[in-house]
Image 1 (cartoon, rainbow, N blue to C red):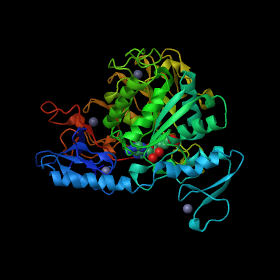
Image 2: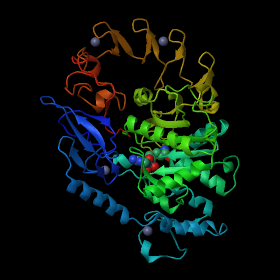
Image 3: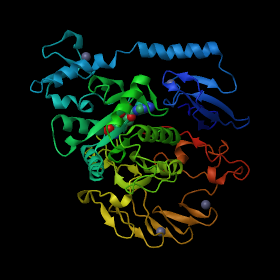
Image 4: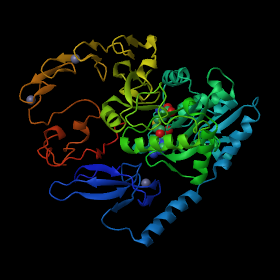
Length: 491
Ligand code: SAH
Ligand code: ZN
Ligand code: ZN
Ligand code: ZN
Ligand code: ZN
């Protein structure tokens, strides 16, 4: 969101119960740091990181008048009232699924079914014909992926990533999945169930996504229009009731969450969304009363004693600290997640030379020792670590771990007492391993995509430019451990 103002650094502060609402539900509280002035707090959209996506802005110290609040609520309500009801959108596919032998046609522009004969309403549109009904349940195969704005960016899993994720979950006895921004996982389960294709046919899924086009393909019983950054249902109580009903039919140990948020997304609101979902499951799952408050042995010992659901959170390796600091039960796995439509990180890109290894990983609270990643893609069991690691990841006897994060084998540095990226040299001035060409002022240009250095030139602690957080002169006097920085979307 609003990270683009050239004035200073903006950090996420909190989600407040009485926060004002923008058209995307309750806003979040942020704080903006200036070079010469006092920091100032403001409310802004939870989901849009650019003001061009959502223009809402409210200084926290300028109280929103009741008239303004009422007007904003009206704007929110008006955009909901203007929406075609979910049941109406779904009626075409519903009818098609009832005639499983008949082929159907869909318009990719309008995201709806169209009668077989040429329909003038869709003149000039991309109409996909002769789809067997089961394919109607895979809308991401024919709808153009949203990539117009960074907040909406849809990067779709390659088939082998879907198989790997679902294979792991199925292997852990998971039979029901809540997909948050993971339509390909939802589709795989839903279409396998429809065409009775083992082993996924025994699974069920619920999709929470903010792409409303999916409402034409999935019923309100399995899809709700949702904002993961404030866990807001755009259909209000009906949306919540629908998810509650789904949870009511399943037992806690058989349900998992798969979440693939936009990479610019803030970790803390996402963790808040997961915790909200865990609490909902604990209240409504059919065995919730008997199920202990402690997580089952298949999951990592959570930092909190709160009961978590098995969770897979798909996020880039360079945001590991954001995930792990906010949710210590999540561990990063070596498995590299490939995408079908990512401009660079695709598994079958035509320009082989440009093809790079995916920076996207699975973060999970499932015990790493229980996950088996495909040997044919180079993953192997590291005996000392008792987990599957990538081919390049060499075990370091001194660190007692397989240390690479992004692929290339790391090199152990005796001075740092840690493994470091290959090509780095130990600098006695900086007391760390850095690229040989660095200038010892802390302004190291790190070439890693999405690294703090390239995404945010100012210090994340004080907002001033010229040094990074670890060299901040204010470090001892003023610390802001809970405030997560706003990063620009790098996806
Ligand atoms: N790799 C996934 C898709 C990830 S793209 C797959 O193949 O299934 C991110 C997804 O999150 C998209 O489907 C997008 O519509 C959805 N999304 C983006 N912002 C969201 C938000 N604020 N709340 C809920 N869903 C969101
Ligand atoms: Zn908004
Ligand atoms: Zn059309
Ligand atoms: Zn080492
Ligand atoms: Zn140096």
